[in-house]
Image 1: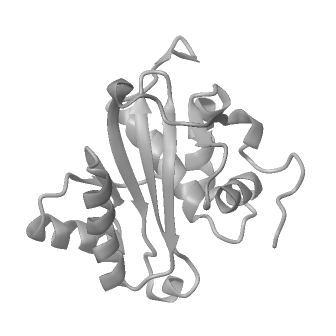
Image 2: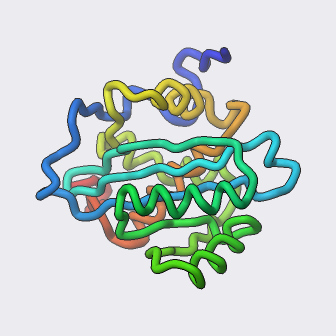
Image 3: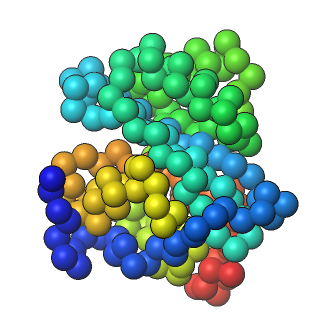
Length: 193
């Protein structure tokens, strides 16, 4: 176990709001899934594939589930299709690089999944730093309890010094995707409404 430094890191855990139950489905704008895949052959041993399933509402976004597993490409491809079938997302966002580029091409030919390529810009630290205002504004919700929550919090609290950065990267991808799409809570005059 590697505890996160007290008060350290780019993201403060107290910025996240907590939920006991997801909002009523009538309030959901959409469900999205965002994938950060292991992108290099040597990373398959060191970095897991991660999928965040998010519920988007007018008042905020709710992290419903985190799937995180060390997998080879064939298993990862099956996992993308399986989780999409489970949650019926409006968008399956995949980083358009290396493994993700292959996934987008193959699943685009083989399935009707609502695939959306995502091309990140800049370093991981800068990408998350740009998106932290939405978290700090209390517009990102985590469950009070979930099997994956402790590991997610540990990584986010220690970032950029965490041993893995896949969940932090998935989170910044999600927030940028929603900001670019104009989905969820909107930033008006420097404040999220």
